[in-house]
Image (cartoon, rainbow, N blue to C red; front, side):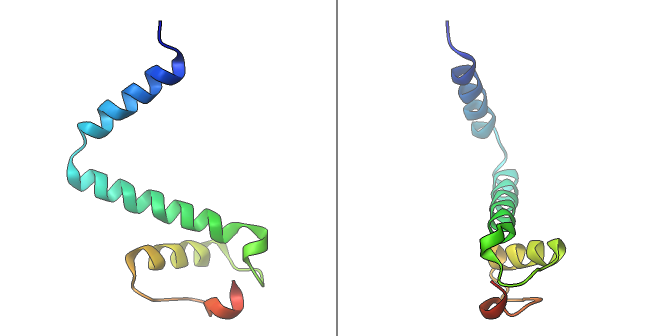
Length: 77
């Protein structure tokens, strides 16, 4: 009998295999933005307190390579 972890991994693999490519790209962007937001939210990642919306914007800007910033990255992070 398969363990819960093995069944879960198999179910995720099947769901990803059936995913529309557009949905896969959107999910990838969302995951990278979320990971970037979490990394920028770490206490030792900030030189000064930065609002959560600005951290989210910085993460989205980094993933989409727009180069827009609400704070100077060199002195804020």
